[in-house]
Image 1 (cartoon, one colour):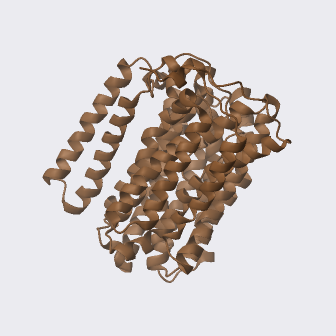
Image 2 (cartoon, rainbow, N blue to C red):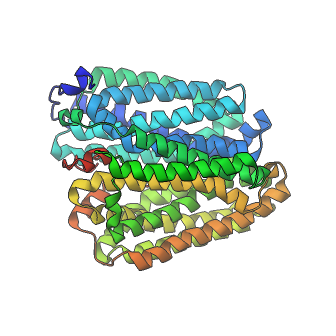
Length: 515
């Protein structure tokens, strides 16, 4: 039975202007909420060696520290926006912020690795609730003439948060404890909730009350991905014929088949499968899977290599990653304009190949090498290729879907990228021959890192080859080009979209304007 509050439309929100005091407060709430998630998402990898030392953990435990968060985020991001549309965007934003805060507290106080991994999974659920709503609040409350500016501010500050996260985190890890990267969220959360409750108007979609949330689809996605990741990580440790590993992989297969059947039959699926009938859309998402899988797998291993093999401090390792976000912020818009002029095929072909060459060049980063002669050139090459890829990819995904499904297209692309990184973190270390204790032995880890970066580079370049055969060369439509320029580029996932989620798009109702 639908709760009464879901059936009643919220009062009409004022058409806020950016220059007003209330408009600035709304932007502040959205930016701070998303910024907390962005910082945590980029800093945890830098903390992995310190976490491993605290709990005397294996490499598998460090993998789960990363993948537990991404698992729940990837599984629930497609329904996160729907919940806000139905029950109130500010309300769900605040719930997500509180959820994320409680999970962060549990992470910071975790007495062992099991509690830490469970708390990281809860963090992912909180992020899946608050991040879509941070953009949806801006989209629903600002005057149409000011939305692009409000969302542009959100995008820019989110990019800055992604850039400074590893630096600040590295400093806290080095001078105090890795636990502080989670506990520092708490005072920020208090500020976010105070601002949201006092200054952000409530908005909702009264037409969403008649649509049921696809929790069955989200649950099957979580079970399938979780079983797959467990089987891949555990299999690398104990062997692929071990009963628990086989059972996990079979469970993943069954859940995957059940997910497809459910999405075909439910009235409002979180992932309408007919969107993949477009060759352009499917090709762009396969390329996304390759590029972001390579990115996620490599960035899991790079901070460990820098600290365990090259002897970097956490602060130095965090600072070493800054070029990625700096280059992305500087070049992504220009790459989008280039794609608009010449079409997306060339940038989406050359970009992943260049990025793959940069990842392969990281194989030269070994004990005795210097930052300036090996790591920085490889990172700049990779970052340039990634910047050349992301904006054209986003525009292509949007252009390949009907206008009313723009939000669905972006949400699916985001989920694909998250899932790619999730699987890569599980697969890449095993494929490179890294065992559970390898990160404790610099020589063994360095050898595996060399193999892993070469594999990641080849995978990324394959994304470019796929683009060459599946992406058309026509320039992006004006709608797609305009919308892609307003997305926020993040290091660990493609641009976020504050538009309609899969369920709403499937219902045939026009989506909110792209954020």
